[in-house]
Amino acid sequence: MTELALLLVAAYLIGSISFAIVVSRLYGLPDPRGHGSGNPGATNVLRTGRKSAAMLTLLGDALKGVVVVLLAKWFTEAWGLPGYVPYLAALAVFLGHLFPVFFGFKGGKGVATALGVLLALNIWVGLSCLATWLAMFAITRVSSLSALVAAGLAPLYGYWLVGGATETGLLVVLSAIVLARHHANIRRLLRGEETIFKKRV
Image 1 (tube, helix red, strand yellow):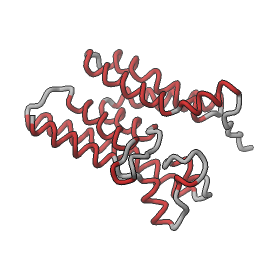
Image 2 (cartoon, rainbow, N blue to C red):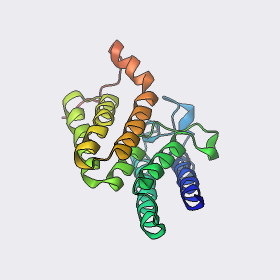
Image 3 (cartoon, helix red, strand yellow):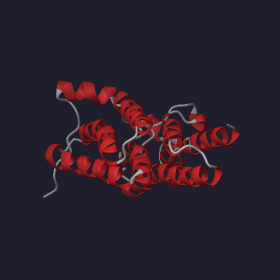
């Protein structure tokens, strides 16, 4: 189906825009791939000390997921495509973020983009995942653990709030990729070496 192929290619290309790299260049900051975890994401941008740049990165990575899914929903209705197409577009933009064609296929871990697509696919699923992340972070002060728990619960939230085997299956794939991208964090968590953010008094 030509329309579906064009939509998925466009979603992937939009996902390939790495806001960590773009924002860092606009701010004149070091390449985020050159320090910390080496991932082009908001956390590495934050390590430069520019909170505004990190926030722009976070928003940009989330918004590209929102925009792609909302456009996919519109085109699905306009072109009479199957109802699961926005979920395929969500996966495509997510993979674009992880493996950006514009930056040597070396992308971030995808948490912000995953949240963006979830919010756009179903606001309640997205908010449930966000609430889970916030609750876990408030308890543990460990960002990666919070992301892992939220990602792990995303398919369950989707099943309860949306239903549909295909849609739930695609959420399982998305969540599994998020978990896989955090393999190094999981090893550090098991060793008790993961970064804990201290509460400010």
